[in-house]
Image 1 (cartoon, rainbow, N blue to C red):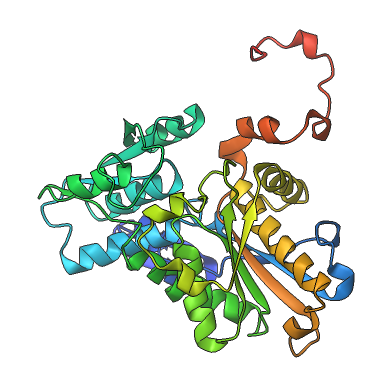
Image 2: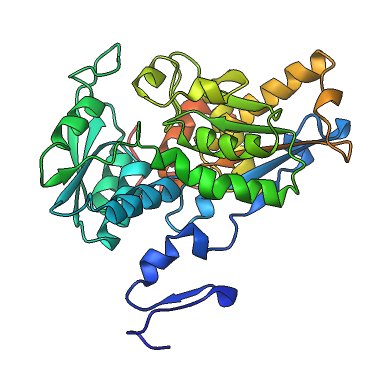
Length: 357
């Protein structure tokens, strides 16, 4: 294959030429993201005809769900001419969104990316940003965040983005964020389930995944129940938000959900580890989405409402997206999952690089 001529062989999943990486990031030129049924050991209602599928968004080229809206936002801004004269991006993000934006922007000629990150950011996540060439700006976030709070990273990123040489993609209000999932994620799920989907559930972060996916799904089935899963108050799950933190999101996500569930840290991390040990590499936010979905199904079962959710095959077919994998968060699991969940280390006394307690 020529290294100068743009080529892509869809049937062989090969990308080459000057635009190879840009093509590799374009969902229109990729196979469907896998949809995988979770085992019955993790589905307490399997014997009642409930089937639960994970949409493995961590298998996208950048390893996380944000690869889709990041590519869409940057490409659409390039098409509108918004990148002309722009030397750097500026965003409020401490993880997947901003490094995905940084990589997408480089495909369109913008080499530098800055990001406001909260003071409590983990060292591992900070290293991840540095690894991908993102320059973090540590920000002391307000204790009680509110929309347009001048002390918030969201506000500061918007302000900095008004400079002629900088651009704030605006993940919290840019319609190309949820638009990416309406364009790609929703159609894939509808097609993969043959239109027989009973429930869609997703964790609430920037809310783009839920809004865009549900918009497409409900355009085909207006009665489809959509479950939004938020972090329980005072609980931590990376990439997800509590109800208070959702105040900083401009999208009207409530108009797109039929039910809201709250999930706590422990169950989110436990289900993440359980999924991963079964072969579905799913991070804490994936565990949180599954926890909320199972809570909702349990309530429906207790209320005798499962039958109303059954499709033409007599099944309750559920889908939840897995935003990323567990590897960036390995140091966090011992905080939320008991020591009994981890196997022992034999001959531990011989370790030369044992971390200090």
